[in-house]
Length: 274
View (cartoon, one colour):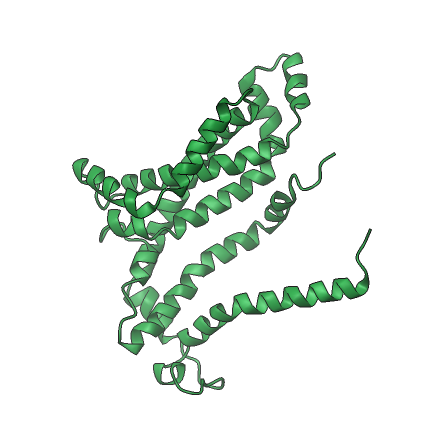
């Protein structure tokens, strides 16, 4: 049964209001990044002003934020390339396990994910120092894979649970082994969910601050750590911080726009059964 036009209009207006509320901080940050500090912090706020991209130039050229963008991209992409394949295979196995054995494993993974990251930062730092891996890509990637793996497994398992067991049984009758059932039968079905899981894993790694603050250094500093250096009492730093924040969001926004079709399919995957 379709909702009435009045209900559709109310839902549309509510969605527009929700969108405006969520976009207001982003719009305000962008306006701050193209204003001079005297205009950005005037009371009342100036809506008519002469825009300037001076702070964007300072951030990406003079402050060399492009180096930090490369570090963030290398760490985030490497984390996805490692954690998603491992998590996908583990999720398929857990979705096909009989009995209550999988529940204990899943509960343990969930407990690991819920564990406060601040308590894990010190052991990771001690381990990195012992292995002489402070300020290196491998240590940061290993730490992010470790803390994000439970999320990947739980999310991919939910997609595999929507794949009928009859498909597995039909493939086994046709002579497929377990690996072929996973790779040739189940994985193509959950491909939209694989895109969604990869995107969220990328976002988690790209936005990680605490572990990046502890484990990185001048050579591997990421964007969240770099942007945290600006603020304080100098108003110019707030404009630089706003310009950097807008720059940090752009790669993710462009990436999501490019994968919009896969995102819609992934979010809708499993919503309708039958």
